[in-house]
Amino acid sequence: MFHKEGYKIISVALVLFLGINVASYVAIQNEEWQIAIFTITLAFLILILQFFRNPKRNTIINDTTIVAPVDGKVVVIEEVFEKEHFKDNRLQVSIFMSPINVHVTRHPINGDVIFSKYHPGKYLVAWHPKASEENERTTVVVKNNSIEVLYRQIAGALAKRIVNYATEGETVIQGSDSGFIKFGSRVDVFLPLGTPINVTLDQKVKGGESVIATL
Image (cartoon, rainbow, N blue to C red):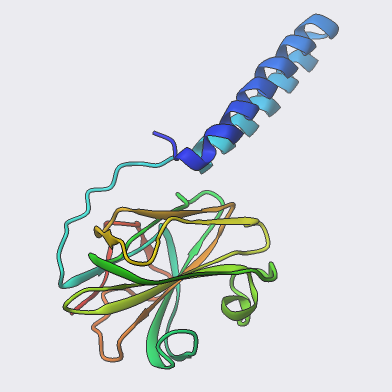
């Protein structure tokens, strides 16, 4: 299953794959060159297909848990001052996505979207200390009767497009599709101080399935 954000790129990649290999078969009589071209173009096609994959996730919906919004590795767990929405200290959990991770962003909790904003910006490497404030990013806040969670999609050096589906006023389901980040980046999650964290630094998590915190 592939994400809808990849349909156009996958179609182009398939046309190029077929066109290049048909042309090489017709124009190049050297079998070794034909095999080399086929291998290179096939590898490129596989990379595109795996990048836009959208595997089904079995989210156990629970109002007492916060699930990881994306696949990747936990790179930050620390107390910070969140100045865009809460304007107070929060517990930040950051998940870094490499180009080989699934890049679908999912809602970490059930609730109502009370804030959703896009910010244009730079494309510093995603682990840069200032990336969360200076890079292109979107900020979404979901609130329910138990908690208010902010998560921020952050572009990186390779991520040139962030897609955010969350709109203010809508009710969302935990683990459902919230957006997509193309070609690697990170997502920051901001939780109330004192929230018990279920993950550790360098731990790999799955979006929509791994519980990163409990209430």
